[in-house]
Image (tube, rainbow, N blue to C red):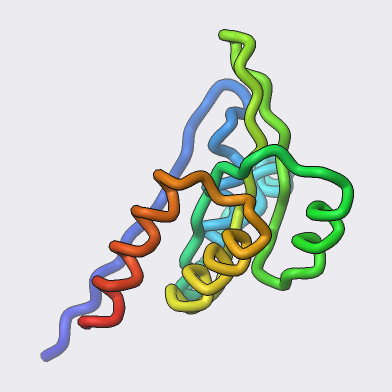
Length: 131
């Protein structure tokens, strides 16, 4: 008999947080819509998704227009932290880990991926190739 592992992901916050978009994308369930329909919850998420939240180097108008055309790019966000630091990040999603990695490599060709992130992606790519 084959056992099935069911994993439920639930984010509970008294407010909309910086992780809301990420968790919505991973689960495939729009948190904002769900809040409006909370009494009707009967959701099954079965699609396997790979999601990466990746910081980007500063963008100009030309690079923004290039990456908006990439199918796997779900969003581009400019974030201001309480410390005053500002950062631009993107959410990349696909049903294939290799496609997420390819998208990160493409962004790197545009000079948008910080070096420390590329090192991690290269290691992840090597690990995924050996599986």
